[in-house]
Length: 184
Image (tube, rainbow, N blue to C red; front, side, top):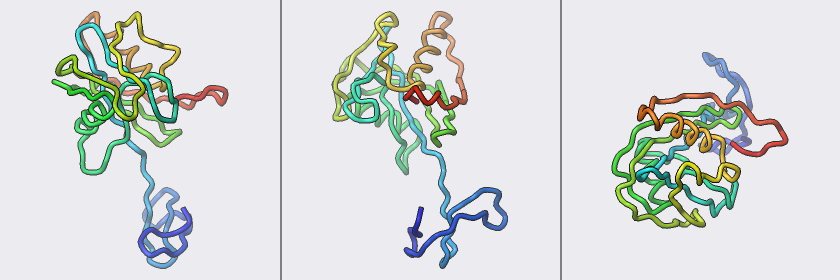
């Protein structure tokens, strides 16, 4: 950050009085500019024994498979964001939702939250951000072509929890991948 979004003057990086972290502070109006993590909200839509995946039409990871998810918007709840992303990417409605996985990714300043969800019906289609949308049985999941670690981990948890029909909320911190691997 180089300039204050309020007055346009330059900013300096310092620890403001009463704080413990480095912040950008305006040199003129003294506005403190906080930079906080982004929240990604998504769903794990289930229809019987199958889960709904979308093949990405956008970067990052264009052409790879993912659960419908994206950045939360101001003015919406986590659940609203997950439902909106499911509608935008898969043209699908969810009948019910329950928080299922929460992943902290401090190395990229993100938190990913997935809701286990039941599809309202079998009506779905590729939205603007998807090349295709399909229902997959566990043995059909394209594991090697999943776009993000949080998606793979959510699916791993789901298939491990499904036999007992018990789905505890899971919270994990995912460290950065080695430099040779590109995925989140």
